[in-house]
Image 1 (cartoon, rainbow, N blue to C red):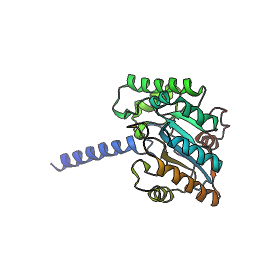
Image 2: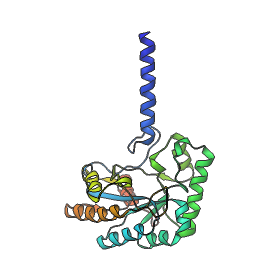
Image 3: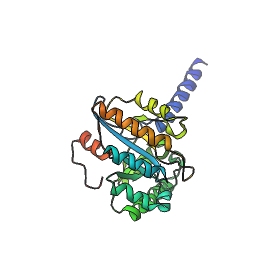
Length: 245
């Protein structure tokens, strides 16, 4: 009886852990993903999901230009189809754009054929809008299972997660976003924020725009350098970043 109880408990723990690993940004059970540099680096990489978005991606572009910072944007393909001009503005401003699937499904529960199609449709939308671009891919919600990362890599994508998030998708204030980020930053971080929302085009991200401005000012004052994800990866893997990544 005791043995059966222990076996059941162990199985439940394994399921819980497996579920956690499928969504945890730093989890590496299901395959390697990039989450940043070693703790203590003076580099930070701002990343933004779920755009392009009007008007907040454009307002964010103004803040980043004012602060002379380049960031990495993971774009939803259906929004790129809707506003290719904004995607183009991102690239012309020197930012990196990556694949965030076509319609933002939770890939954990998707069949292999659907995963491939989500990646391919987003890739076509990006290529049509901006031409050559990075091979970076971020799974929606951070959700992945071994097949997701395997398919991504076999089709030429480099999976990217994050180490710090501002929880800005439902933040009640700018200060809330700032606290969430500053409480976790230790250096070498990939920071997750949002310039759009996966449910509807036009999601209000004004808090994120203001928080971005304040966070850049704070960390530049503290001596941090803001880089794109490919620049950070180049340092991590001791290689030169490509011209398009």
